[in-house]
Length: 503
Image (cartoon, rainbow, N blue to C red; front, side):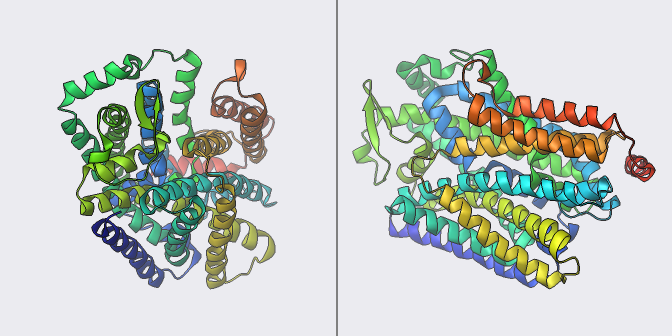
């Protein structure tokens, strides 16, 4: 890495830490720390939701999958775009209203307990446990992505890179909480967007224009340009099913809850979906044309980079497909611009890790510590419990991410399915069906989580070669409905739903 690239990268990191310190001064109670006092504007909320959603998966995982398999991997992007739109369209406004109506709930477990009048706290505790379980794997995916970035950029060992990337993100999340996370996500979202637009445009230009770039891919492997060739119905269904996950992702749902007003939802939806769709196109084209670029260039003349190149079947390609965006950043751009692009990759990684750590810490502070052990804990005490929880959860995630062979996409898919199946059907039913009961919600959450774990770890492959979110989501919803039909929700719950519809 050149000196100019290194300096640019360091300036970015210092800026993110500066935002963390500024937010530290504005964080006085737990509501500030985990929800920002419900004062996010539509632009910040939209880009924060998008940046915390997409993570290193958008700049490493998806381009890497398309690089390795072609446009058949783009079905995931289609499913995500559909799911994100439906989430903004139907869930965002209603959740923002309902969480304020039901005792001003500030976390998902808090909302579920208040929504179903669960004085036993079991719904809160089980929800918090599910959050901690799957976010530990989700956070570890970000740690892997960060390690790959630092390893490729600074010629570090995998473990050295892993710890450096983790320490930077933990620092500003520890200090500033939700405001730091949201403000940095806003900056990071802009950086990610610009990077995803710039990289494929420059790559296509270097290949001689659009037609030449497409022809170059076709000469290597025509199937890379076909979205359906070699892809079965189950594979397409599995990819599209990623969209179901949006309804249950706590780090995305909390952005809806933090909006300053339900009236901001349409503007936030427009900004968020525009950012997402263009970003997905950029990631897909980066991977697609990366195959042609790496194969057709004399890499020794293109500058210094640290990705390993191998030759398979006469085709020159990267040994780790998930490093294609990093490689493009290093060999196509001026060192200062390369520093900005590498910062964009780190932005994608940090913006998701920080959100996951924050939701996990709030689950420990609000949903375990306060609810079970210290009901009279002061706000200052809870904030510090949340901060130390950030460090503890991050440490466990680092240990899981310690395997250099880990794939970002595999870790993300497992956690995404867990949240989508456990919480997605319950969030939807709690917002739109007055008949759901506490027992139904509890049974649905447990069913969704258990089905995902069993399906992914013991049943995947063969006739069960279907993304685990599909059976998990369906069975969670069915169980919640069937159990709820055997009971009657309290009258005040029905009244709250009518009130939410009128606002």
